Image (cartoon, rainbow, N blue to C red):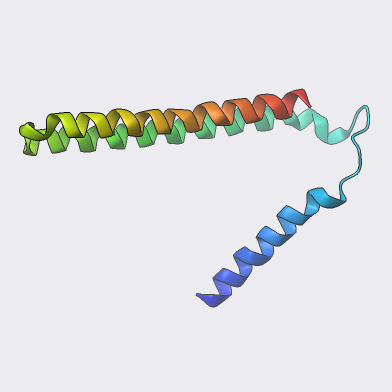
Length: 103
């Protein structure tokens, strides 16, 4: 377990330290052709995983209502709150990707 922890810590240090040594962007770089593809894949991944999360939340709320119909108000409030948080993750991803593509 310690080896895995050290691996993740070193990977995080390498990935977070890289932007500190970055140079200013040039007019055209060969890597810039991959930005739209990466943006599309990132948004697809975020939307797909948010959809899975929303499906799981809805299924759990439906099952909870089937077991205890009297708890509907409490379940409904937390379901709507959870779905709003899940959807906000997809919207934040969209905004971040939009800003990265424009930069």
